[in-house]
Image (cartoon, rainbow, N blue to C red; front, side):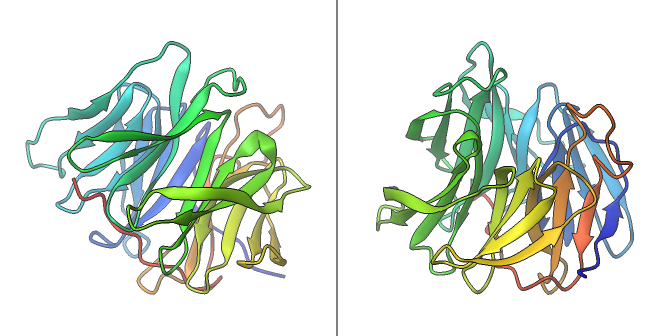
Length: 283
């Protein structure tokens, strides 16, 4: 049985978006409904918490230090701690009833950021790409709950999840770095696919909301591995640690009448596999 350990014991309402910050050798994750960005250093155990003025769906490291955060009203930039660099909007587009959700940095340093309606209405959300200079391009404008996004090791494929569809889709990525030719990789039959990560073998790991597990699929869509978890609502996963071999998993307790004591914590599976280095946002 695969050992599942507790990395950070917490009571996040909606823990999401684990990201390994290679520059700082730390894990970044968010509590969306708590409007908090968390960091965790697995060596020292040091943790930080930063409050945001809005619900934030994801926070990713910037190449020069600091964070890019997908917020309710758009994408914003925070400077490195202690730098004195003020927060500023890179892109602001508030829509009543809509909030930010998952985001991912592409191999070229751009950010793919998702949105959704609070009521999860069909076609109420979107997936967009923002360049470091703030130029935005809409990729998909008809999704419900924009979630996991990731790229194959060679950058030629992009994986994507709109959770209510229970699909993991795959796109081709052209020389312009834009995804085309959307098609089905796999349909999930137990729970809803949420956040995902791609490992060094090109396999897709996905957290199953209401499925209580993480699954690994091969590039051809075959189910390769299932890791059962003690919590019902894992939300996303990412490889971290100095060798990118530990799989970190964020979890949620929102909407549960009797959540497991570890719901809202960050779990870790040591030595689960081998992850890919994640690029920082180039802005």
